[in-house]
Length: 202
Image (cartoon, rainbow, N blue to C red; front, side, top):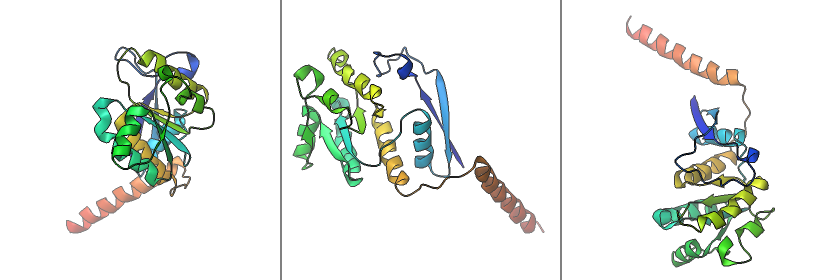
């Protein structure tokens, strides 16, 4: 049995705040997902934290230059799950050079249509890594809009990769288990180990 702990901040209680956490911000709540698979445990923790992972639809990708080496891998992961990819100019250009077809959308400061316009029902998941410049204050509005529409937001590469794996597992693993089921399996494993060690000592 695996237990995965996730920290999260109650952004819904603070309308208008920026969801990109700075080093001075600390989470006020922790949740835990339990399963035999890490991916499913991660998915459960996301759901408990208020981020229901989509199984289909459109993913918005906007990755900064520091994380550009992961752009192709992430895009292929979501395309493999039959998601449509929407990206801002930098990410879209990089992916197109790699032969990956994406739909382009403007950043908030570049005009319209932009990612914020698409948040209402057109985007099911947003993956955004901060560029760290002053334009983040403007582009951060798209994150707040996504939050208002309950669109899941991922702000790290590791989180995005874990999310793609979790979605893949969710598509095939939908079994509901009681908490006792997990402990019964672990107890049975422990008993089996004890029996084996006891028999080997005879």
